[in-house]
Length: 137
Image (cartoon, rainbow, N blue to C red; front, side):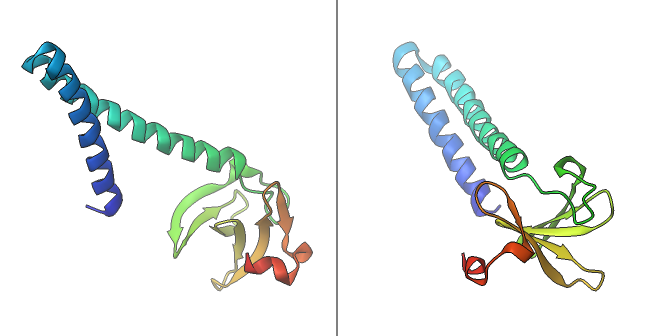
């Protein structure tokens, strides 16, 4: 069990206890037990919806730029897993990219990383337009 699973379990347990306690005080033991079950399921729904919103935020607002060849849009990228501290993507052309935060690196055939683009908060900026002072942030 990792730290996120432990935190999710504690969150769900607190929600379940609170709803179960409220229903127990008003309607008795059976309502309290049903409240625990409903509360736990409510906690799971809250956490899952949070993950869904985060996924939509990443896919829509922080979507990926055109590939280097200019053919593939954000929907043509396939997520292939993680690599170090970044997310590995492959476009339909077969080019590999590594997204680390707001930077997108192109992975060469010899597994070297070359900065391709940087997200400046509104749009993607090509690496040849990036000032050296911008790379520190």
